[in-house]
Length: 152
Ligand code: SF4
Image 1 (tube, protein in one colour):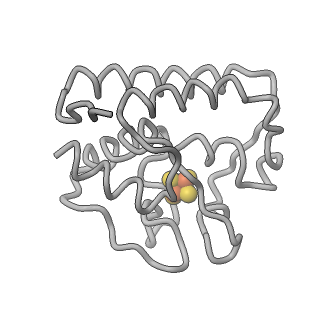
Image 2 (cartoon, protein in one colour):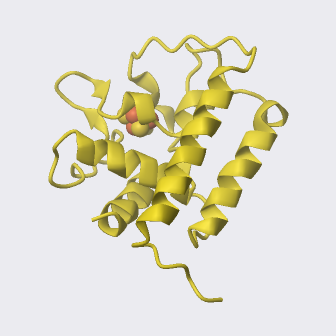
């Protein structure tokens, strides 16, 4: 199958808009969440969990990271998310954090959402992934690194 031209800005812009709408639709769900930004779920070694990102989520995250003025993706560590600022222990892209960070990784925020509660939104993320020629969810560090190079 011919892969789409990922330098196509319009394609990226449409995908970013759809992913943003998915995040907004998630926030509008009547499911109680209370993220206190403790950064605990960002400690991958501690939790034993790493979020997986579809390509659209990775593009949104990479663009948000670029908007912070950084010239490269922070070096990956074995312990924590590369998008966690080590000094402040805050997410560098909190407003644009991936779907999994909003739904699955924090007991303090209310625990994982049931898949059935968000399955329609997952399907929409998968559709964006397909539009961008993605091959399904990837672990966050690799997904963001690849998207960073593609949006350059
Ligand atoms: S993207 Fe942000 S919220 Fe998600 S794990 Fe990384 S630092 Fe934490």
